[in-house]
Length: 404
Ligand SMILES: Cc1cc2nc3c(=O)[nH]c(=O)nc-3n(C[C@H](O)[C@H](O)[C@H](O)COP(=O)(O)OP(=O)(O)OC[C@H]3O[C@@H](n4cnc5c(N)ncnc54)[C@H](O)[C@@H]3O)c2cc1C
Image 1 (cartoon, rainbow, N blue to C red):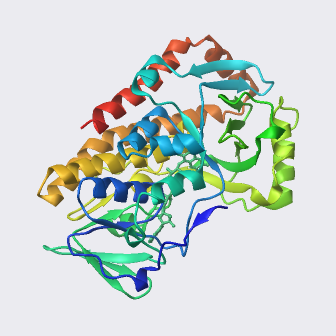
Image 2 (cartoon, protein in one colour):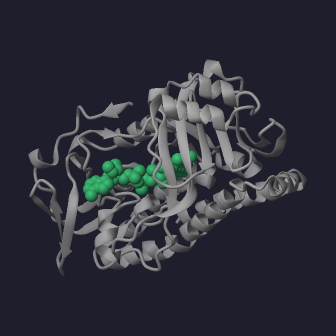
Image 3 (cartoon, helix red, strand yellow):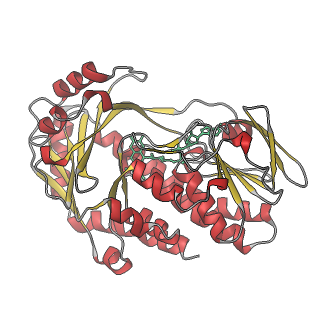
């Protein structure tokens, strides 16, 4: 797992942020993007991350054209492209390897200069972190609560310290402490299937560099993409009760048995992935919130609208949030009105993604062989232009939101 910690200090050893600062809780993709975007519009921002080092899990991530457009607004798209892999063709396949549907890079994406890009999460994270100076990221900075009043927000840290700022942004993920204090402690909503992710050397898989695929079987799916010139990334999903805890060799063997008989390169990818690097994650989301923030506090990314990964949009939405939030903060002197304006601009779009992604996962995980055969035939008969239209709408709306 790659990590970046050398230049970044712990929360307790740095000077206190100025009281006009935006305090961002969470140094994931959403938190770092929010800090960059805020600083770009002249609003000082500091990130508090609970972990002792800044790092991401050892997996790949796909950024759709809309996510890349948002990264371009942060000035990072080229850096991510340089360490990632652009995909020209995404196929949905049957488990026998038959191509059911193809989504190719379209004219709108070419016109905007953005294409779906796969990248190692650590490389995306590093590209974001590099845009922030060391003083903007405070490690060992777990938020355990906050108070707000007429003049600002006070965040209580796990170290016993308190920090004061003008606004608070909860970018602390699916189990956000900020969201919990605002809206209570409901558990995430399990989608009924779990996932495993792995990375391997790309030499082990026969797959054209500009092509990725997701194969659909009965109650199981398997996706594979290149993430740079030397590595490929795969993910697998299967229906299972929540809370599985297998790891290492037993997990690898389970995957090999779940995907036994699937067309190449699925078995090859599994066989050549080191068992100790496998990451098992239950797939969850949360129903959309009617209201995200209150007073001087708001949420971004998974803290606001965690989604299942079926559309590959969770991180894309977090980056879009960051850009829109900064636009609202930069454009208004009344900061609380700015937070509400941001939420108003983002709620409908993100709620649509959460429900479309959940629906897509539900269909993708069908188990009944007859229903699966019908589904795959319907997919084969669906004109490619419909898939293209859906994808274009996603980018078109991003352009409308992010261009201001
Ligand atoms: C299997 C899987 C595959 C996915 N694939 C894709 C994909 O291809 N494309 C895509 O766009 N999205 C994908 N996603 C979704 C994406 O990973 C998330 O939407 C994205 O990481 C959200 O970023 P975030 O910064 O909001 O939250 P997180 O990444 O969860 O970051 C939250 C950060 O806050 C920190 N933190 C938590 N609590 C506290 C606290 N109390 N105080 C301080 N810090 C705290 C955490 O340590 C963490 O660093 C996938 C998700 C999964 C599970």
